[in-house]
Amino acid sequence: MEITVQWIRTSWTKESRGGESASRRNAAPVGFALPPPGTATSAHVVRMRECDGFAPHDAQADRSTVDVQLREADGRLRVLPRVQPLFGLPPRPRRPPAVRLVPGQWVRWQLNYRFSSAMGIRGWSYWLDTFNIAYGPVRADLFLSTPSTFIDEQGPLR
View 1 (tube, rainbow, N blue to C red):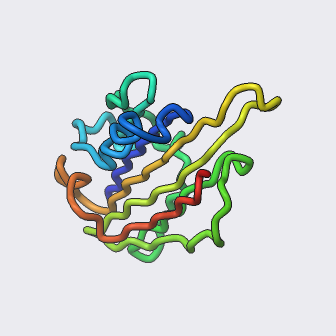
View 2: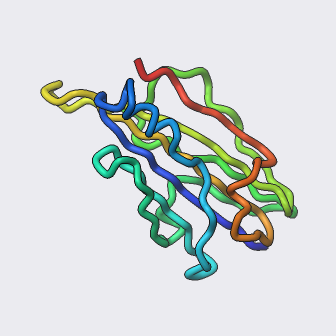
């Protein structure tokens, strides 16, 4: 069965924690139209960074480089994002269980991270990873719509 993966990473510093920069960051899309597939095992990867004004930069990458576990069994797709790196996790309750999709369904799963430099010399930096994953045939604008399942695994960033 066809598996479609879109991985969006938004990154910022404390400069975008409030005001106009935070408004731009919060307005960043969580889904994009899909480009023509590179290969059956490729993923659509989008990066949006504070230093670029949160303008999207997209590419195709091998699906194995995306931090998510995908496993097909019994006509379903099991989806569970990997949490990497563990030291970047803000406090949050237990992780939710994996999602099992049937053909025609898709999930949007969001995780956030915060980091400090090793010596605390530089300020905090942050990531928001959004995984849009569909099981079965898709149209190019699928990830612009409402997902079958939405998992918000974001913790407080302080």
